Image (cartoon, rainbow, N blue to C red):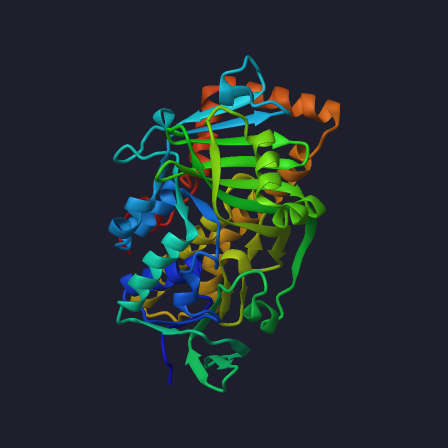
Length: 415
């Protein structure tokens, strides 16, 4: 006797998206999360903003979230990438070492899509939680924690810390890097810490950012200025861990002085609004994405450096692919937790996730490097790519999540 078609451990942004996608295709799911939705919506719970690929945003629109998210979604019309210690392209300086992406160059966009969107995580969580709680096919248990997972030919059995036992043909681990499902299923992981932390803050700008995202590759790590609505920007400031901790506890005037030194003057006066957050950075990659009647998605399967802003988008791709595989299996009368069904999902996502994770790791080592020869080589490489239009367009499509065999939801189509 099953309590639902699928049990999803983790009701964060990737897990909640999966739940809504499954429900849209006629499947039921139970979502389990240690934090109640009300806590996840607090400004102090998650101070980050996420760059959402235009294909990922299509998925949310296809699931009925467009009306709730669009007022808070800042379109990214251009991305300026600069190498070195000076702003370069950001201020129009005559430097060959920059790369400019423009949404007008993307062919085949629907409805004039931008390169992507910037949305505060709390806004995304709010829209997802409202949709999940209103969907009769979805049951939310929060706060609740998974204690053990047992699987066998008859199905998966999940025991919660309070003693409740849930049963379903399939359990999904979507609860982040410390995934209990991954550990319970004996799936190992490879990875390592970076000697860096991400300092995240929101600032109010004197001048309009015009939908332009800036990323500077500095010796200590990338420094990104990401446009938000209401003439604000989200800063993702990568520093060595000791410096990041010092910035966390610095007096406001000291923090602002360090910020101005990196930010420059091109957007006028900058005022920090809200708290500052510091997140340690690391790489983690699950050795496999499936086990008996269990699958992984999102950070439970692959936690990456934010250097390219693709971590959440990788999880949203996982959700779209897994939902399509499971809905098609249900319509064919297949066992949702059967090995053949789960392998279809793993084949679809394994190569993409592994190559992106390792590629981002290579970028970290290449760009968090002050060796003069390395800086010259990468600067020349950036300049060359900037002058080759087909190369620029490929990277824009890749960043927009529109490369490869796309699930229907990422094309904006219903399951």
